Amino acid sequence: MIGNDLRIIGQGLKIISEGVLQIDGEIEGDVRAAEVIVGEQGKVTGMVAGNQAVIQGKVSGVICASMVALQASSDVGGDIHHMSLTIEQGAMFDGRSRRVTSQADLNAVMNG
Image (cartoon, rainbow, N blue to C red; front, side, top):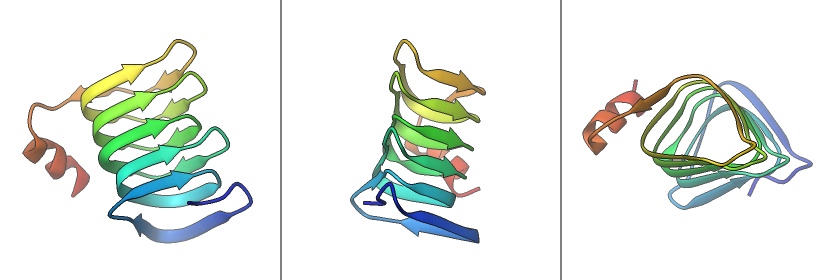
């Protein structure tokens, strides 16, 4: 868990987890986990990648996950590559939605 009093900044920074990564602080860099949760106070400037991404806070960058959920409090500026996308009423999204049909296509986007 990245607490709301923590700020992580680094050029070329990548945070990788095999499990659930809850972000309530601020990260300038890329994050990847099986499940990424950006909490209401969380902010990510960079790529968010994983099997599942639940966004409640702010993301400025690409989101790439099989299942993406933008909750009402979310503010996303960037493209979303996904197999499934849910956007709650009240969520802010400025970017393009790119649906992919296979995990291989999604992995290609994640790995550049």
